[in-house]
Length: 97
Length: 95
Image 1 (spheres, rainbow over the protein chains, first blue to last red):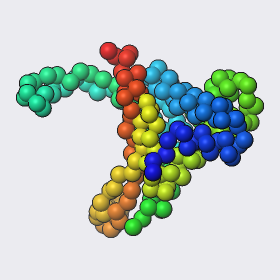
Image 2 (cartoon, rainbow over the protein chains, first blue to last red; image 1 turned 120 degrees about the horizontal axis):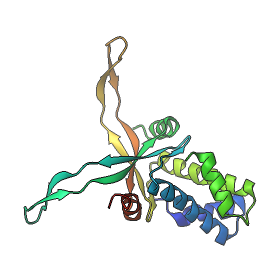
Image 3 (cartoon, rainbow over the protein chains, first blue to last red; image 1 turned 90 degrees about the vertical axis):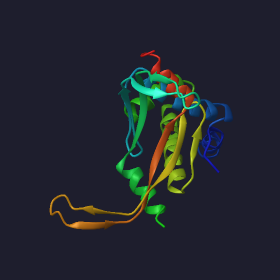
Image 4 (cartoon, one colour; image 1 turned 45 degrees about the horizontal axis):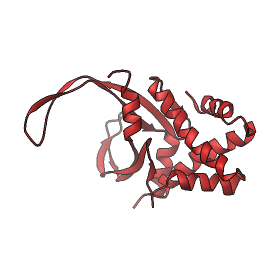
């Protein structure tokens, strides 16, 4: 089962003894601060976890797959995530088959 | 923004909690996310995005210093797919 905000806040409630309301708010604000920062065009570096970077993509030719019509894909900013060394190592070590 | 700057911002916002609790909570959130990926599970945060693991097939690599070939085993790497709200908000400044 995938990890969701509900499970993260339940964990903060159990482990740190925050009220359910505060635990929920803490999780919401955590992701909101990261979004706000990226929205302003600034990189987010979470040591031990990874970096969220922004890349600017130029306009490129695209096509409507249904109609075959040519439509340009507009220039856009996209978020990319680069996992840090520590996270990569942890994932690699415990998921080797 | 670094992790300590993120903690500072959250301390300001969650001003009814102690700074210590906000710092522990932030670290717990990140640790729980790392543990989830470590356990091979996905993370799904609506409006933010999802993290999953992508498989990298085994390949023959090279030691860049010696040119010697090295057998690299298959491995899993974390992957992030931004959610709708994040994609849209990041793009507003260009739209």
